[in-house]
Amino acid sequence: MEYLPKLLARQFKWLSDFSILTLWLMCMGAAILLPVLAGFLVKIDGYWALVLLSAYLICLVGMLTAKYYYQTDLLTGEPVPYNRKKHRLFLVVVYLFLSMAILLISSPLIAALLLQP
Image (cartoon, rainbow, N blue to C red; front, side, top):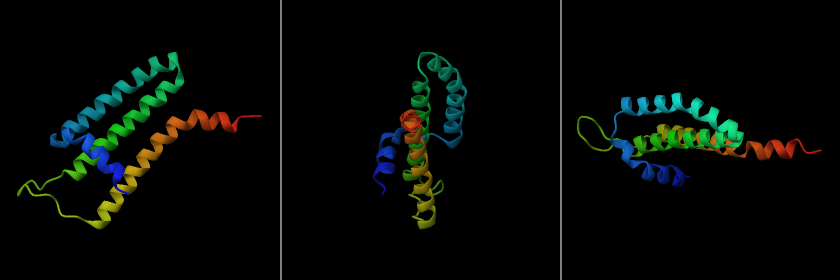
């Protein structure tokens, strides 16, 4: 159940050292650039805009997992203790974002299958 979140956390471990404010500014900068890039990609092919949005969602989940798995207490510098309810909520959010990314990537295929005569 935790294989994908831990894999993403390892891939995005370098982001765990940044502050929340820095990560938020990075996300907002990307959110401002996304419509511009999507506008160019829609002219080429609409599917590439969905790929771009899915990659953005996966990067958001990667940042979230890196900050979650590598979090430390500010005063002592030790890892934060395990909380079962918080962990379950975290896994629900991670898999919800990953399922949205998969749904975005596969939406043209689903639409083609549903609109077949």
